[in-house]
Length: 552
Image 1 (cartoon, rainbow, N blue to C red):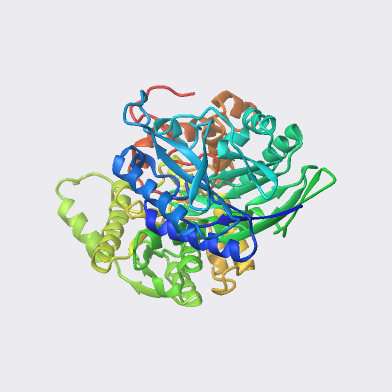
Image 2 (spheres, one colour):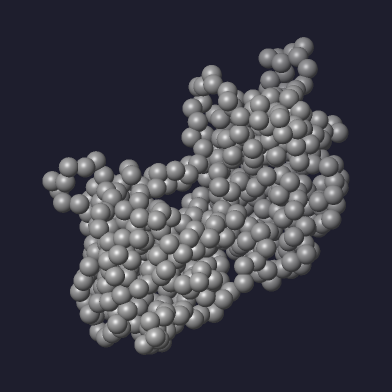
């Protein structure tokens, strides 16, 4: 006995129910033409993930229901094909619950909904907030296709033993898990290992159908996979791209074997690059921006953001502006020009010296007798932010900010200055990783936009904001390898201060960095949304009060 299964690893748009439905219908027709008898769609495919408080709107849920009916109606003629369709399902109006719907997977066949499974484990950690919207299900769902009994699970259900065990007890011969699981570095391997545990516990092979695409701050990398009963990867779809992933199930003498292509897993840097590129591309295109605009300083952060933007959108949709001040070194504009030329993007120079002098003159009476300090430094950053936002307003391009995670953690950024913009590309990338990624990109050209795009001097020169004479980042911060390690331990891993000190970090550095993290929460609340690539980002993962006397 054989069964051909396709996974619709597709990139959906949140709230575009008609468009998402048409994508699913097209995938169903293609799968049917390929001889598939089962099509798996990702979690909440009909509405996209995550729709957040849209789930609280009755009109939204009604539109989702219309899309489910459209998929059933338009695929009714695909004889022999069953579809597992991810969607929200509204509760009855008199349901005694704050949440208004369920996270559902319906088995659609011959134009009819045969069964509907409701997600039982509702995650409420990291970026997840599902208990705000959904009521948990209680029962397993097992259905038959081509003589094989398939047990359906939805994402978090498969991270615990109970739901898989219940599906096996109900007669499942293979587990089909539909997912919308956000990317962070190392998550792909973590998923495969966790699913391997479910296989070992149940003795059943497993199919993992995953979403792909960017949605605001989260990215889904796809990389759907299949595990045999021995726990080995029997198939894996490529990451960060749409794919109709096909798995052939063979059953002989009571044993089930899964057969599929196995895409390799790239390096961590390649994965991170693809995630950032996809995050930029989908944020810009799904929101209808004609292109992007960024301040190109001749420094490492803006250089990296430029390279990501060109890989994501193409050079014709990227504009750069160099805005030299009295403290800008000649090598900065030389390197900025060089990089813009290498990547073929539009490059303009607008000196901020006249505006800076005008601001200082306007404030001269107020500041009389006081030395220059960060006030004048921030003025320069805010002038640049104002110019970029003016260009954005006039021409419609969204401004990409260039601050990294190390700066966001410590407040080494200026409100209404370098934080001004619409999308923070490397907001969750530590400074040490910025350098690593820059070197990786110079050695690789994954999108064919040009090799070695970042001038070597940008990578090797000491980082500087260039807001005062001879300024270096390390004048006011610990070395980045120390800073980033402390941020990771304290912010990402919730390690106590004393534990970090015991690990060998100087008390003065630990106290300083953790204090900076605490007092700069007000800045982060006003920062643009940015791409999440670690297990804990400054976004939905990090919810600390601004007014707060506690220090761990």
